Image (cartoon, rainbow, N blue to C red; front, side, top):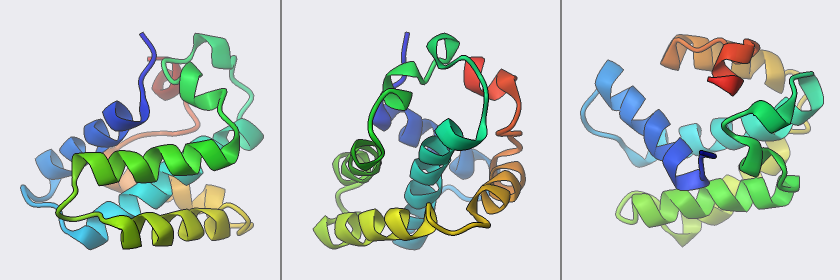
Length: 128
């Protein structure tokens, strides 16, 4: 079964809640949305894993702008009291700015390892 935007975002947020805090702030949610969207967008450029076997196949087939919209809209639907239209706009801008930064992939490797204990360069993560 392929994961959708809401499921992916919700899983990552619950992981943060389990590891660090039971409450999620707007700032934490904004950071997570931007990093998750950038991860999926940049994955297509940096990794050489067979996307058809990935549990994220449906998302990975989307164009970059749809991935950006998908994760920001998922945050709006899942966490409307923390993530409103202003955060959607700011998130989409942040995603487009961050994916053009040359150091973003290295940042994402560290971020997901530190925050989620995930090795994003491992095929286990993408095909699990």
